[in-house]
Image (cartoon, rainbow, N blue to C red; front, side, top):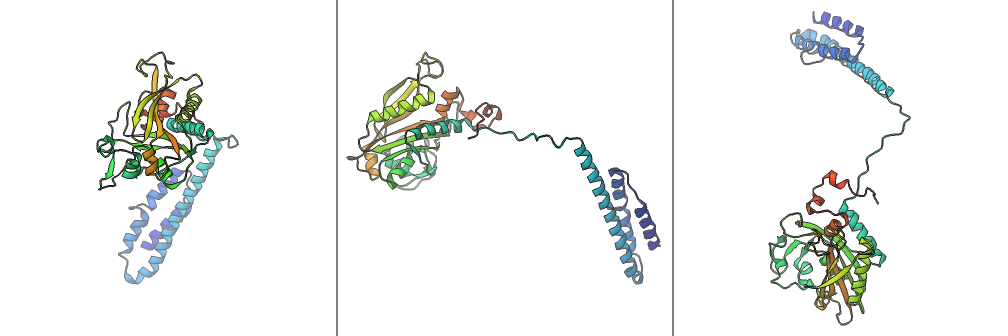
Length: 345
């Protein structure tokens, strides 16, 4: 009885001639699914007398292989036909659509421009770790023990340990220390990189931002060298008509120290909301390297002198592109990022 059913279904499979993918699917549903004919025949095979199983088992397996191979052939047939039909809808000789090219982040654009300007003056680029110890981040730079930068409220400390705390660097000045410790003057380098400070996030501040610091140490370096270097930088970046002024200030690692302002790029010095009606915008701090810092790094302060400066890339970018909210730089909003130069160099 079982063998007769197998012969009957075998003839049906051999005679089956599907006209479409739907017909092939109907074949699968009839023969190959869980409750299909093949599975039912195997269930019936369990009741066959033991002496007949050897012969019928071989026949049943051959029937199953036939059903599966026929269905595989149907699949390939209609898959090829579908692919050929799809290709026929297109002119394959036409050029492709290509890929959408992204753009550099505005901070990357400004960083690159700053680096290129200082390279013209002979400055190299130096980098260092973002996780620093107390010596390179504070002590070597003349920060006194009671300085507020050493408080948890101002710095992200990773590990507090006696005599050598570990923290996320608060400035790239730590790279200057490493350079002076491991080399011999003269030095003329800039140090771009990300820094971290424990500040509330707002339109004007963030817990991380980017800096470019610079260091020049040699015999006979003076404050006039510092001023002329920064005059050149500002006029290259913002235009030859940009006005500059220096105001006395204080930094632990420089003496004398100054903050440098430029005429507001928005109102051209007339006064606006960005410059608080003063016509001036602060862009960086600078000064002559303190002799104590030179001595801490193993450099003879009686023979060598130098200057250092540091600026926030976000602030420079704000002025260059008239961006009012610092948070836009890290929100990854494509609507904001796509407004900038798409040149990928």
